[in-house]
Length: 275
Image (tube, rainbow, N blue to C red; front, side):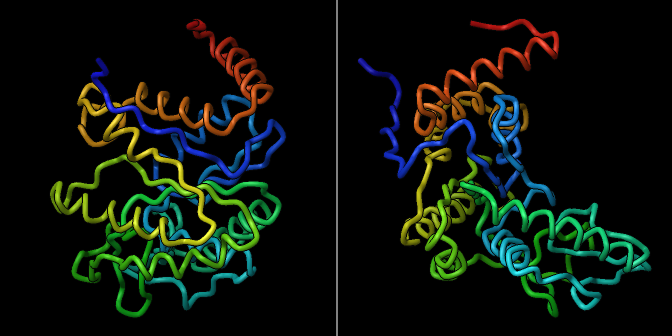
């Protein structure tokens, strides 16, 4: 008798080879999986401008980077003598707007170069709930500014699908939904948000989906696979999900090379190799 729900195998549109160049954008779960790809020797760029959680902010960053649309002072928000770029995390704030713009546009150009040359994008959506600033629209990070400056809402399925459909026409993208639970709105609110993301991805023609969310909730399905905050997957859980990802996308030669790189990385870190 099977005492767990085994997630059906994903049928990939292609494999990931040893020399594949990969860009990963999205939530902090992306950072966890990306670190494992880096450890295994892949050419991967992971959230170079910081973790991004909602589909609109990720799409905006991608669009700006690809089109070389530099930020200007009109894109910044001034609050108590500090300039903020609310598209990205709090490292993009400075009392000198020119210095902030130089940093932003340098990093944006770097991201654009990586996106254009990558064989594969892996995009992880964290939440469909967004914050909007009156004159700036959807923001990616509130930078701990007063809550009354923002309006919070749930993106629609069609809104997300329209933002991402143009990007799947001529490139390979693997979408996934973060298994991290956003429970500020309660468990039901979290399910509404995640369901919106899942339905939106399902509506994108040509989208490829890897079931990180389903593996966590239906295959592992136990609090022992969560970190102490009961919201984030534990290291064991992320390792398991990454293993499923490798089984799905790596060729035998890629998997062998990844394991060799992993052993070398563990030796360099003076950690015992577990068989």
